[in-house]
Length: 205
Length: 205
Length: 205
Image (cartoon, rainbow over all chains, first blue to last red; front, top):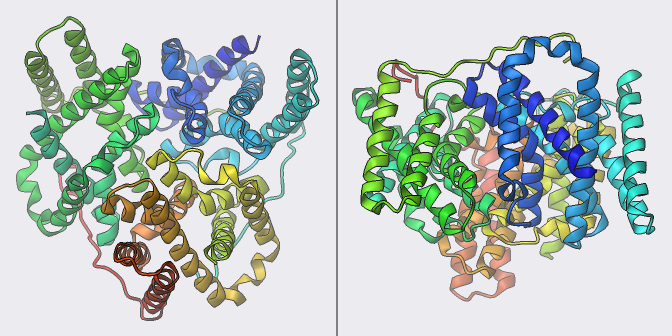
């Protein structure tokens, strides 16, 4: 089941990347590349960081075609996408959780310690979006507001805890998705956010 | 022959990096570093991504000196470089093709699949420039306009096809350079470009 | 002794990252992440580049907690930190030198050649700050002015020379710190800087 959610997730992420590229008036090639990096960049950074070679997507060429295809398709349907606003938010939330769980699994199999496993989950979840924002010259949106990265962190912690307690894998997955989706959608619905740190530079910077 | 073109290519790329650094008023050190990263960053990202350690330039210290030297030299001759405008464009095009072919070769030797080989060629060809633009705070120019990255992609595909057909290596190289140079220079001459995607964000972003 | 200086160094770097995040009005999560990346990003890039897996901090979860803790702590005390201006500059200079020496050691143990060892020291010393500046949308400050990266380079060269001459490790460390601190503080005191390269783009860019 996780693989289907993953395929939906990389498609949704690729589309979000394509829209960001469109805001910067990129050409077809730029759109395809930002779509690819947004969708698969988080897992790539995780694999490179953990020394987990070969990197995931290099063994699955279909992921390359899927994300590039989704990016180019977005060029055609972008004008209608605001009608799908809410669907998109739910797909994006599911993608965040799927990425997080998959990232935790990779680090688990490589026998990393719990804090590194949680970070591997978070990196998989949020780094695609961070790379997208760097390439599109924006301060990464996940670092600025909204309960997004925090959802990834809490899902990773919950997943790891249930896993260590020996809970059945299906129940663990279901609990992670249920909790993560509820938290993320509640955060959007009621605009939950973390305290912001505003610092005015003094003479010494 | 490829090695000589490669040395010319990293020199040309280092100079383009130095000019970008000069536009941001960087100091000598920044110029040297941007020159180095522009010239050798694409190959570095490729090697780190493919798990191909040790990374190429770490085994060839002369490449470090050459690119840093070219960057610093550019500080002295920058005011005269617009006279060399056309020479520079041709060197840059040859560099793009040499980088692409070398990137394909590395992935071929590591037994990656065709789409990954093409991507390895493209990453080698364009990622140095992308890193240069990120460090100089520009939206990467290859993602925005011009047939540049696309030339790299088509050259990689041609090279891989001829290689798989068992065509003689020299002919394959000659065909790749002939086709790539012609396409790139034609794209510059007649301002060929890909369709641009312009997206105005609605309320939901 | 180096380990204590290292712990002070990553704390100081994490705090500098948190202040940069505060200037961009990031939330708690962004502050923690920028603090972490500023402190440990240089070593991470070095290890990924040299193929030195597992990456350092993944084997020391306490570094994760320390840097994130220092980042969040900075949110509380930021308003008082200008009183500690000079202390902070000294800690930062010590951090730069400690990072440089540690980076050289890692490359030495992996049998890289001298120019790569010097670059490994510099990358460890300055890349955390470069990643911080990319994520906070600034042209990296080390590339623009001040004798900062150059101090790292000279310290790395001195360290490597003394090491190759077989000088006692304690004396080598002491000499590196003495020289580096003196040079860095003199550069701040008398505003030493390198020549700047300003280039106005012509029609051909």
